[in-house]
Length: 494
Image (cartoon, rainbow, N blue to C red; front, side):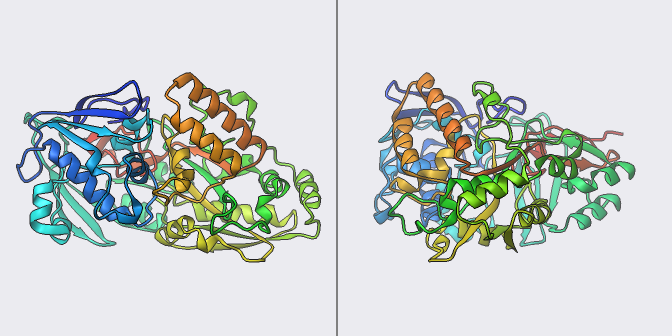
């Protein structure tokens, strides 16, 4: 698991792990005696089976850590039903498995950690017995809470798996039950907290002062949980289906103009008061990672005159069209539509005709991942996506953003070009930490100088609690918001 306070890795389901000198062979030893919620004991075959189920369910182009591991295990996307990479997972004994990768992957332990949600363990014998539908109806896991009931778009109810004093490898919760409500509107969540219908909630940052006035207590994530940024659609390696050399965003000066038109300081003060966030400079490079030379990446200055100059140099002195797309229900970032709306007049002021499109998160994610839908034809406009990623102590998120070029494909359509393609191959195959850090700094310099994204903020997520019921809630929310690690919610004792 990822530590609350420094994101380092601590033993969780695995009691120990190691990697061979070649950076390819990873061995994990599971804890002995871990129970599934139905009483079955976890074993190494569940590790293999969980991988097989996860890959089968997500092989249709899903991005992220699943695809990264799938590719590293030599899975064949053209025949995933018969060759999914699991043939390269070796069971050494009931509690030990080795993943034999085809490429070095020296941070696979980070990718496999619970903070990235990669492989929640599935009771594979039960899955084979009841099938996908049966498992969906009554899922069985290993964590501190077990499933009770789900009403789609309404709520999920879970109950404590073990009681205080019982033997369990993880944190035993204070509360017997937890009911999580799905409430899309921030004002409604705030009302539920005030009327005590809910006792812990994700309240929009603009409503935090009102929450405090009403006697609620603010709790902060122990670490910055997410990075927010805008990335440009259609910037692919030449030859990709979505590549279009007429796309204005392929011009560095256009990207520079869009960056310098944003008054980040005002946005920061408005949406994230009280130090809840800091300005970003390079996407995927947390300012809290000390081994990078962040002083060379000052946030882009707000300079509308310079922005107009860049547009003129790019051949768009008379203006340019732009579609900005974001979602209202992005976990941990429900403020994105308001933030996007606040940026529209800033771009309008330099001659950008902005169309703001708000779509459900699922649709947004599908569009970002679909190369074809980002093909603009001959239209002279920029398409951009307001999005967020969680944080990681390594560069795995960046890898996920451009791993479309690897056999598994399916990565998010972030900025890519021939330089990055070459960079990725060298970086991926390096097992020297010093060399990798130097390369990553070089990538950061390249991204900063070329305005590859529109970096916005690194946000430390907040939640509010009712102090009549909850004493404290100490967790690293990452980009999930206050539904993560609820077992660390400390209840009031009378």
